[in-house]
Structure formats: structure tokens, C-alpha cells
Length: 462
Image (spheres, rainbow, N blue to C red):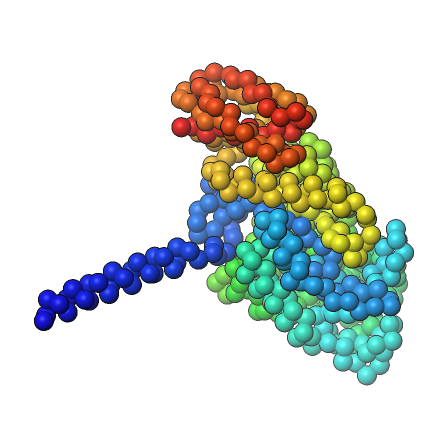
């Protein structure tokens, strides 16, 4: 009787272990908190030790709705996430808008922004005819939506950079300052700002302690709302003015201090300051990641990432609306993380060039596929190894070569002998072909099997 019980018990244990392995082995991948890789600081990593390449489409109204005057159409966030997953994208900027309205000088189309972080609790009306803001009281609906959308993205394995402030609108949107909650006629708090246009810059500089303290409380509220989630990054401000540099540095440090106390740190980013900002200010910042302006060839011939910062090249800061297939591949081969400012169904700005944007979206998907199958954590830009000048390499082990404008290139494999398996990918059609093998210890000639330029050669040591 005892032997039978022992056997049954052993069988039950084995059955449990088998089911546990089957169950957990089939679970979808989960996201872990990102940190800059010490092995290859061009990329983030997580508990896996692998390089986490970030790429994806972001759009203006993916956090707060942007409404036309004659309609109130909520943004379909679930459809947007489904759209992202169809391209295997894993990163978005989650946009905020500081102003009550947004009106581009280029389009002169007025949009209303109905959701803000602070309550409209004043007895008197603001300049838009609605109750004034009380900047000491948070609008919980804003932070509930923020958490819901970050969580929903995380369930789809998408990392979210939470935009904390938005500086473009204050400078360039029609009546930007008069539509800012911090304008003295829009709140009950008497911050010490006046109504002149020059005062608008004080909102994003360290010249008014009342303003700075309110912004710090807001950062604390954001961190309290989403700081426990793993798929979070932070971005201080979209395209703030050049004089905001020290203010942005302060806000980066403040987030890092607050998160250190909480015991969970997320990457903090600083993006191009428009107009007049410099990439030097980005590289000199305490940020973990940056998005540069076009200086340094980031549009057409990107500078190779050297590992000072994780670099997310963003079409928003290079063209505004722009980018193409070649730009995605060139960025990837130079150790950068390309992301796309996506007009997405022309819901905010009507661009009518979706065929062009589709090439960008698909190319980001293709580069993501390569990033996942390569040993990316050990690969660095080695443009001098290939006459095409676009090469990621773990020298002697693995090479990825992009033939942007030619059909053949010479690749220097002199550093190691051995046999390499070669495969080819057509960045235009998405076709793949085997390329046989090549022997190292010398320079080799790679000839694309495809009719058009844009071939990608992948070599891996047997």
C-alpha cells in the first residue's frame, strides 16, 4: 500500500512539473523594466540580458483627445494598439498637450484639448469660458487614463514613453500662452506670471519657484500613478524652447531622485529643443536616452551611435512629418532606434501620403525581426568594414550589411577564419534568399540577388 502511494505521489509530482513547464513555456513574453545596457549602451536591456531595440509609430492624440470644434470623437486606443501589433512595433511616445487648444500656424485648424492634469475648480471662468484651473488639485481622470493606457500597451508588449510636458504649442500654436493653464487668467493660484508673451518662457525655465514646485508635484503624481509599471519610460518635454535646457536637466534629476526613493527606476529622455536647441545639450544632459535634431546627418546618413546615450531617432524632430524605408534601415545599421511620427488615419493632420508611411512602418517591423534574431547586445556599428558603409557587427561572429544604394559591397572578414552562413533579405519586397557560405580570413564580395538596391546581407559564423 505504501509503495502504491509513493508511486502515485511521484506520478502526481511529475505531472505537475510537466504541466507547469508546458503552461509557463507557452506564456507570451512579458516586459521588464528597462535600463541602459552596460555591455552595449546603444540599447536598453532588461533582466534577459538581451538588447531591447525600440521602434514604433506614435501619434498626437494617443493619450488626450484632440477634437475639432464641431465634434467630440474619442480616440480608439484599442484599435491603435492593434494597428501597432500588426507591425510588431514595441514603442510609442504617449503624447500630452499642455494647452487648452492646438492650432498649427501651417494648417490654421483649431483643435480642442479636453483633458488636463489639474481640476477646473475655480468660481470664475478662464479665457476659454470654462472654470479656472486650481493647480493645487489634480484631475484624477487624467491620471486614471494615463495608467489605463500604459497598462494596455504593456499587455501588448509595447513600451511607452510618457510625455510629461509639451513645449511646441506654447511657442507656435495660435494664442499658445493664453491657452496655457498657467496663464494668470486661467487659474486661481497667483503664480507670479504676468500676461505678456515673454512670461510664457518662465513656465519652462527655473525662474519662478511657484511654477517649478507645481511641476515637481505633478511629476510626483505621475510617478505615483505609473511608477510601478515595467513598460514605462519618461520624456520631459516635446520640442521645448532652447532656453529650457537647465529646466529639463532639473526635471530629469528630480524624476531620478524620486524614483530612487521608491526603489524602481525607469529611463528618462530629453528630446530635441525647437527652435535653437543643439544635440550637444542632449548628449550633455543627465538623460538616459535622447532624440536629436538633423545635425549629424540623422536624416540621410546618420552618425553611428557611440554609446554616450541610447538614441531614438524620431522623424518628428527630423522632418516633422517624413521619413522613408532607407532612413529606417540606415538608422538601424548605425546602432540607433528609429521611431515614426505617424499621421495615423489623418485624424489630426491630413497628409494623404499613407503609401509612403506604410513603407516606414513595414521597415520598422523588418528591422525588429532582425534585432530579435541577432545577437544584438554584442553588435556595434562597424561601417568601415563594408564599402556600403552600413554594417552592424560582432566581429568574427555575426555581420549585418545594408546595401542602401548599390547591389554589391566588399566586406572585410579578415579578423577571423571559419565559415559563415549567408542569407539575403530584400528590404523593399520582404523576400529572403539563401546566400550559401563564405570563408573568412579575407575580404569578400557580397552581391545582392535582388533586382533593386536595398539588399540586406546577414552573415553568421557556423
